[in-house]
Length: 114
Length: 113
Image (cartoon, rainbow over all chains, first blue to last red; front, side, top):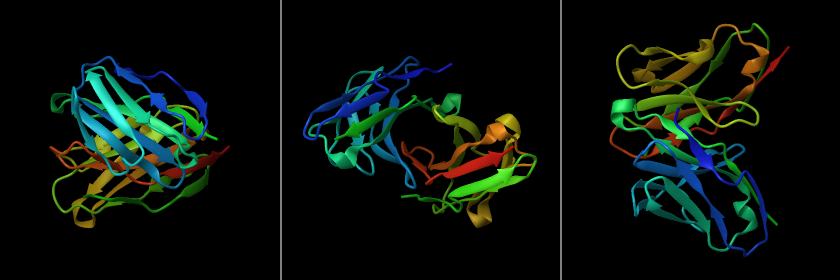
């Protein structure tokens, strides 16, 4: 089974703090993603990475950055957290075409910015 | 860019009722289609997917979905729901060779015992 691990399940941060959300996968997948999930809006793509040190902006990258120094680890960074970034953050990986291109999700990180 | 519409925000049913959740997408070319489910307190799990072939796809837990290309639809169905089907359901679309998976807003399904 694919395992996507998000190190922090629940965080509370203050406005202006720098926040790191870490994600680790154990399947050697090249593609990794960060989404945020908000009621009534579904999942919106923040950033994705298709290889080490490679990244692309998703639909809502403003206020976020990412880091992919190793294949198994994809970090989401909030340089200066704001209250409108209170959300559930989901990390995901995508299997290669030979494995059906299925996307696997982590359990999510609930971030509250106060 | 493709967009995904899920018509129902919240559906409430009794056990043994039939369920159908609508999903439409806006891309005119070849697409890969998915339904994901998120049970309370759990991570998103794949219910079923369609890439090609038979447009009627069977997934886990008795769910199925039908791809109707002319209607740009991929509706999810289950003939008889159980209380344990209470969850949020997401439709998602991916264009082959594109990294991005676009999600609908989700439908919350509440099954009353």
